[in-house]
Length: 103
Image (cartoon, rainbow, N blue to C red; front, side, top):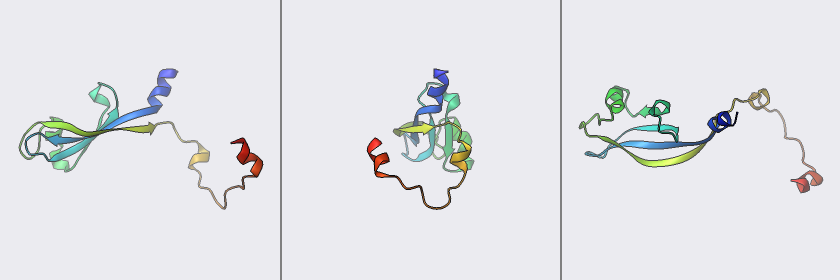
């Protein structure tokens, strides 16, 4: 069970795919901080360039793509409950002074 919790909450890596030769950004990748490339999501600037970017080649000059501007982000993959999905109506309940002190 602890492995499953680690997959639900954690850190992902988000980075740009930039050409080494012409310095153009061809896409962006995001995925868990693992060595498995199967779990990465790829967003391409232009859908016509998808094949070239999947091969890690620049769609403009055929140069190699390199990871730049990487950042670690927090992700929460747990399913939402019915209470979290339901819209709230009206004012939030009033918090008394005693409840504020407890927090």
